[in-house]
Every structure is written in structure tokens, then in C-alpha cells.
Image: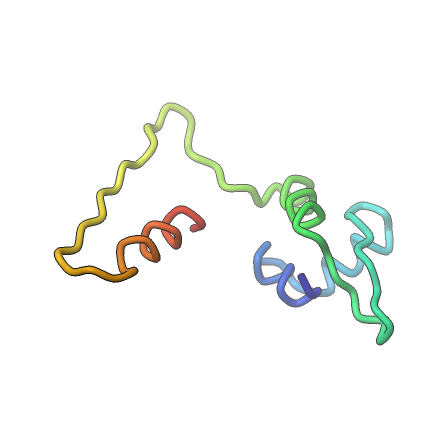
Length: 87
């Protein structure tokens, strides 16, 4: 993920990620030939954990169950289920 993509996923500024990486508080990522900073999925998960940005369900709450139905063929149900799951 690029610096901007990682920042958007974590809902923080790009500068926050740059500073954290420079100070050793967050994963350093890797730079490409043009000196652009990129992060792996594992890096993004680690940053999420360190920044306290992980998905959290309130204590004692039950998981949500969602049913998806469509009377037509196609990919609507699958795409909807995938997007809900990723969210």
C-alpha cells in the first residue's frame, strides 16, 4: 500500500505515518526507486494495532448476522457479502 492508501485505511494523516516510521514507533515500510514509501498488509495490520485503530465491538455485544438475497442471477450477492465482510 502506498503511504496515502495506508493513511486512508487507518484514518490518519500521511504525516503521522511518516513520523511514526522515522521514529521507529511504526513499521518502516519500504522505499522504491523514486523514494516513495510503501507498506505491506502485515505492516498496515501492525500500524492498526499500534495506533489502536482496529475494529472493536463493544464488550458484551453480539455479532451482527446479515442475510443477503436476490432473485436474479449474477454477482450482486457475492459482491455485497464481500464488501460487508471487509467493512
